[in-house]
Length: 233
Image (cartoon, rainbow, N blue to C red; front, top):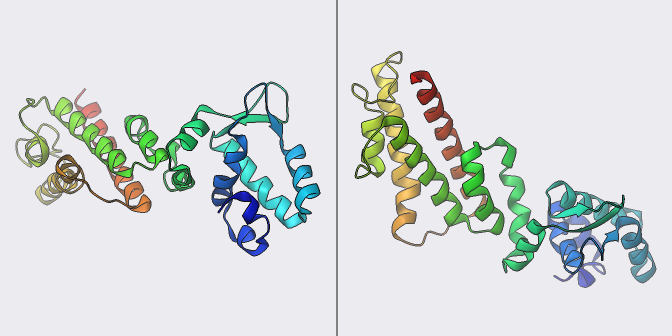
């Protein structure tokens, strides 16, 4: 729904979460730049004159505005109080799926393993959830192979089972029980087999919340690999 239509549907507008309203608000920044910036004060005043908005709607837009700023879709210029669209914001608008960025709240970037963040967060932000999941688990596979010093021809679940084999695996922890070591090997093999391999062979439809959960799992596995690698260093 265009912002102009939303402004005459007060109940719907006020029912939106800040990130949902921000989807509509970002379009207003499309043509902004450090030279053609805008301020929240002027934006709200314009709405008050053109649509006679009340305090509740002003508050909703203020929340959405600062959400855009906090998430890096809009940045403040050197003139305090004036803002323009960021590179991230432009990519969101140019992706043909700008509404996808409202799902960024499902995947807090600061909580991710740095490598997973670098590789998986950008496609997730664009709404390309299949690529985000594939990229995350590809990094797990690369990290495991490197840490376990296994050859390139060993891939997928076989790689995980060799690296974490309860008796001979380079990344197995002798301080754990046999059952725990076996379970970890199953976890890594199952994750790669379930979430990376299907994406390698065919199109897979993934919902935003599912993708976020999968990426978080990849991040957790990466931290396990780091701990095993650091232990052996």
